[in-house]
Length: 489
Ligand code: ZN
Image 1 (cartoon, helix red, strand yellow):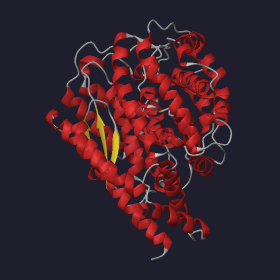
Image 2: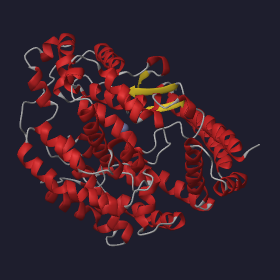
Image 3: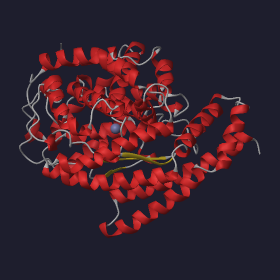
C-alpha cells in the first residue's frame, strides 16, 4: 500500500475512535443517568488507552518520515501529513510518566480549585498551581520552542501562534479598547426580565433561529446540557446543546454561538470526511465562526429587524414596550466587571489580555504564583477600573489553570479578531448584506462562509487561512473598527 493510503487508513481509524469518545462524552452530558458515572469513566479511560497506543505507534512515526521524504502530490494529502505529524509530535514528545503525573496533578488540582473558589481561599490552591506552572514549563521544554517556553503552549491550541504575535495584536487593541470602555460605558437601556420565560417557547425560538441561519437538523440536533457545547460524532453528525434559564434571553446567543461551531463543521467538504482534516482548524478559527454568528450578526440591528417581531410575539408581556432599537442597544451594553464569562464584547478582550500577561510572566519566571492574586487585582484596576472584592471573583474564577491549560486564553481574542476581519471581507464582497440579513436570508451568509472557510476543514493552518480569505494576516484593526461602529463611537 502507498504511504499516503496507509496514513489515510490510520487517520480514518483514529477519527472513528475520537468520534466514539465524543459520543460517550455527549451521552454523559446530555442523557446518562447519574449512576452511570463511575462505569462511564472506566469506559472512557479504556478507550483513551486504546486510542493513545494507536496515536504513538512507532510504525505511524515511520510512515510520517517516509511521507516527508516524498511529499504528496495534492494539497489535501500534504495537509493530512502536516496535521498527522503535528499530533504525532504532540503525543510522543512527552514521556508517558510525565503525562500520567500531569493528569494526576490536574485532576487533584481541579478538585482543590473547586473548594478554594467556594471559600475564596487562594492559599489552598497555591501549592497545586505552583506545581502546575512548573510542569507546564517542563512540558514546554519537552515540546520545544524557538523563542520562549510559552510559545510551545500557545501552539498547542493555535497552530503557529507565538507570544510575540499575541503581544503585537494586543498592543493594537489595548488603547482603543480602554477608550471604548470609557465612552461606551453604561450607555443605553437595560433589558430586565422580571417574569419567567416559558422554556418550551425558548426552545422553539432557538430551534427556529438555528434553522433560519442554516444549521442542518438532518445532520445535527440540539439538546439541553449544564453548559452549552458543540461536538462532532461523525461527518454527518454535528450536535449542539443549549441551556435555558427562566429570567434570561442568553439562550438565543448561545444557540447562535454553538450553531456557529456546528455549521462550521457541517460545512466541511465531503472529501475530507473520515480523516484528521474533517474538523475546524484551530480553537481560534472555531471561535471566530461561533462569535461571528453570536455577536456580529446576532447582536446587530438588521438581524433583529427580522427576528424581533417573532420574539416579541412569543414573549409579549416581557418585550411589548421595548422597541427593536432599544433591544439591540440593551444586548450591546458595555459594563466593566470582574468576571470574564459575564463580560461584554468590548471588555472581554481586556480580561484575556490580563491572563495572557500573567501567564507569560509565570512561564518566564518573572512572577511567582504567590504574587499572582495581587498582580491580578492591580491589573483589573488598571485595565478595567474594577476593584476585585475576593479571589473567588478574581484569580480563582477560571477553570483553565487548574486544568493545566496555559496558553488557551488568547484563542478567545484570536477568535474575535478573526471574526471581525472575515466579516469585513464579506461586507466588501456583499455590499447589500444588511438588506439580505434584514430579509432573513441568513442562508446567503452561511453559503459565503461555507465557500470561504467551512469547506476547508483543517487543510490550511489558521494564519494561512486568514490570509487566503481576507488577503492579509490577522490584525486588530477590523475588530476595533467593528466595535466602534457597533457602539456608535
Ligand atoms: Zn465557542
